[in-house]
Image (cartoon, rainbow, N blue to C red; front, side, top):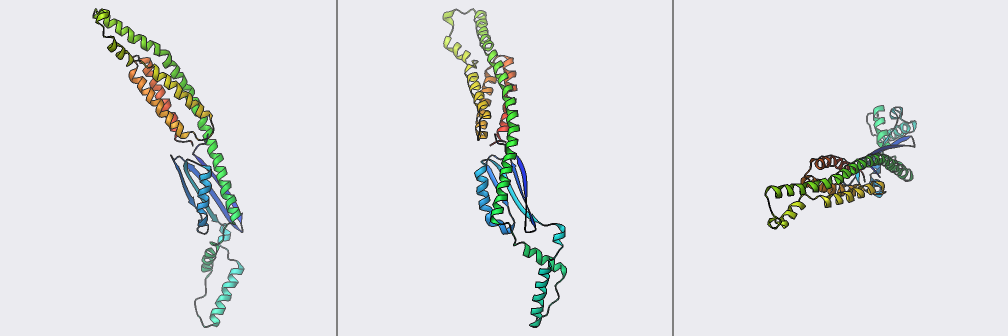
Length: 281
């Protein structure tokens, strides 16, 4: 089971520049991809999006790569750059062009603008991105394993409540028949005077056998989904809707309070499964 929450970061040094790639993932019904790259690497954004789509099907995934240098490096101007600037100044002056000498601060700004053109090699760029995505998958798997354990615990509790509802089902039918016999006796009705089609129709309104059977079947499917591999989030969401539908029907049809109380507890647990279904692929 793969969760949708994850975080990772990968660092890489190249030509005196440090690169850090951060991968984040949050819950989302569909796959949403956000890519942030340095301006000189914007051309690779499409490739990064394709790589994300290969590895994820749901979640809000954000990949951010940025470059930085140490504070000492940021305040340092190479001798080579300074000599080139001085040489160009001398050449322009020899041609009669006069201007204010460039300051050290202006040299720093010039160095930054020139440095922005430096970038990761194509091979290392892809290596960093793929490493980030792999780590993000591992992070989401860890989140999914935690969710799986909780879901397994919740399903076991649900099964106990369903078993109790099944147990009370016979008492529910018996109570309906007791009410029928009581009214028949009080009204002193003969068998020929009883409208059996109406009686059977009334009894069927309290019969929860079909709902219980479907409830057990849906819960069994949920248990199998949790133990399976691959994408389960949307299927889990579907079955929670079916479980809620059957549970609501049982609540409205049951004639004894024990079943209603068990159904209320069951609905609370189904809501927990529904929340988890929104958080896994």
